[in-house]
Length: 308
Image (cartoon, rainbow, N blue to C red; front, side, top):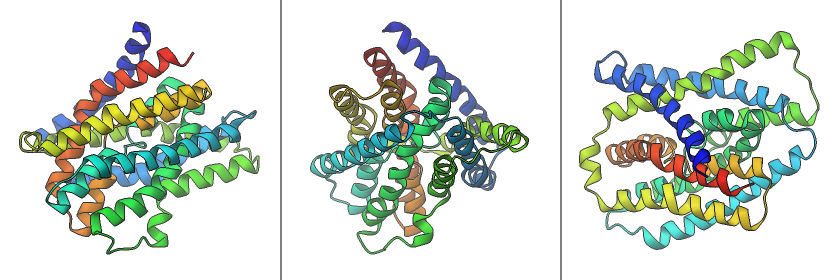
């Protein structure tokens, strides 16, 4: 069991050391919001879709789609249970704060934080099954998440639902289902560019941490409750359910990595676009990310030890 914790902990530490680059660049003013937005767009529109295509090309041929479907069904069930629990226990007088704390408890950073770890620990199969989590996550974020931030006052548009993350999964899935083989001439550059999905998001996250007012947000009780749910309770719940159902080990670990990731950056994106509490959301997401250095190692390491 100790070896499992050490293996995951080392991989998580590697990611946060990459994030230290962004943190230092932010503190020394070598990186600003415009740079971070540009890097994020590169990740969303180019690097992540390329990585998904490569992963799906190397996806398990036998039982691959069955595992993908199981991962998607599990993700839907986890989110339904998480939303119910968050609504029962997170109750703030201020509606804006309540929305932020509920969403940061429910929605995980299953892209930027989970994909690099899925790739490092499980290879292409981990990214393949992890993309099923992303598929469901995107739909929930732009429906439930949008309704929470706006109080139900805004409806998701087709453009929002068909965002780069979802389109990347769908494009890679279509190629996989049609058994379209991407030639090596294209696979080599796709692989190299897709590999940027590991360091770039961590640099962006490191920059965001350098700009966050952590001291102010740590004094809010709602933050600690949202972190307890997102980083420990919900991942433990997911692990217990998957172990009880005897889920395939690779599927279990891929989903577990996504389920144990810190709060999703999309929470901050929604508050920025729809007039929510942006200072609270950005600081809360950053604080979740900082603490996840320990909790992801703990939860994923536990999953590796128990899922034999």
